[in-house]
Length: 199
Image (cartoon, rainbow, N blue to C red):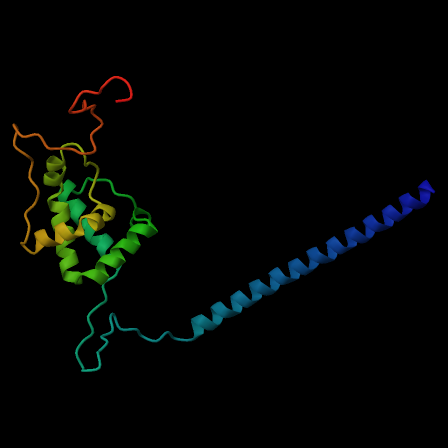
């Protein structure tokens, strides 16, 4: 009986090996066919002349006026990069443009463009980056890093008011004045002393 099982196993292995060999042969044939098709396509592309494409096309609106280019969140990202270069100089190391912003920051820029005019957004980004050092000083240690889209979104009303001349840039408080900080971790004793017992 052991001989029968082993001969059956041998037959199964031989059949499996034959199937694998057939699959390899089909794969090789498919690879050769792909190479032939690619070579044929290259010859056809070389033989047909490509139409000349103008450097830029001018699209017109319904009333015949040239259509303005649409401003996207990628433009806002570019404005931030330009603002950072003006703020820190050309030697400031920035990550590659595609990896710099997350999807969240891109969506915030899109919301900003929906809420305000693109020209005003461009001015606001430039203003936000140029006044960054004043904002850091006025925050007295509660703000740091580089200007980003998240913070601009949070304080957008103030920044756009500054751009339009309604508000002024925050300044550092005078030396004698202490800013009241509600979120401070300092211990403050209660105003009236605590009584002993249940009170």
